[in-house]
Amino acid sequence: MTTIVISALIAVLVLGAIWLRASVRIVKQFERGVVFRFGQVRAEIRSPGLALIMPVADRLQKVNMQVITMPVPAQDAITRDNVTVHVDAVIYFRVIDPVRVVVGVQDYESAIRQVALASLRSIIGKSDLDDLLSNRERLNQGLELMIDSPAVGWGVHIDRVEIKDVVLPESMKRSMSRQAEAERERRSRIITAEGELQASKKLAQAAETMATHPAALQLRLLQTVVEVAAEKNSTLVLPFPVELLRFLERAAPSEPGRATPALSEGLSTPADQHLPETPILSRTAPNGAETGR
Image 1 (cartoon, rainbow, N blue to C red):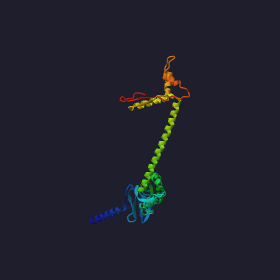
Image 2: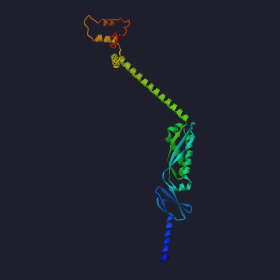
Image 3: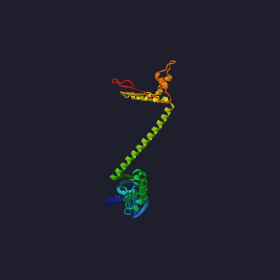
Image 4: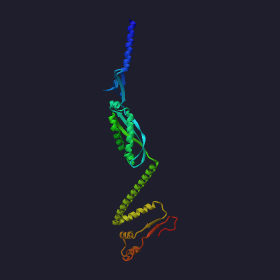
C-alpha cells in the first residue's frame, strides 16, 4: 500500500513538472509576449516576467521591443541632374505594437528593408547632386517620412534614417575639383580688387590732407628718408624742394640789407619764368668718390 502511494505521488509530481514546463514562460524586459489560443490572438499582451499559458491550447510568441539598426545596401541611382551616384544608408526603428507586427506582416524586418531600398532610390532620383551632398539633413527627413508611412500600419516606428556615404564617379570628382578651384580664384580676385579700391580711397584722402597741409608732405618725405636709411644702402638720394627753402628763409632771421644770394635769387624769379629744378643731395658710402652734388 505504501509503495502504491509513493508511486502515485511521484507520478503526480512528474505530471505537475511537465505541466509547469508547458505552461510557464519567461518574458525578458525588452520583450513582449503575444498569446495565440487555438490560433486566435489574445488582446492581452504579456509583460516581462513569468507568463502562464494553457498547455496545448496556447502558444506564446515573443516580440523584441529594442531599437533595431538595419543597414540599407548601397544603391546605384541617377540624380535629377543625370549624375550616377552610389549611396547607402542606415535605419533605426523599433516595434510599438506587437500584435500588428505578428499578425499584420509576415517578416517586418524584411518588409522595412525593401521599403527602404525603394524609398532611397526614389528620393535620389528626385534630388540634385548638390542637395545630396550639402543638404543631406533634409533628404534624411524626407526618406524617414517615406519609410515611416507604411511602417506605421505594421506596428513599427522609424526613429531615424541616415544617408551614410555618397560615392561619385572619378570624372565627376575631377570636374568638381576644377569648379572649386575656379571659385576660389574668383573669390581671391574679388578680395584683391576690393583691397585695391579701399587703398585708392585712403590714398585719395591722404592726398587731400597733404594738399590742405603742405607740411604733411615734408613730414612724409622725412619719414621715407628714415625708412630708406635704415636699410643700410650705400647711396641715399634726397630731393630738396624749393618750397622748403622759402620756408627756411621766412623762418630764419636775416640782417638788414643782406640776403642769402641763393634764396634772393630764387625768390626774385619773374612770374613768367619757371622755377629751377629741385636740387638733389646725394650721399655716397665712405669708399665712394662722390660726396655731394
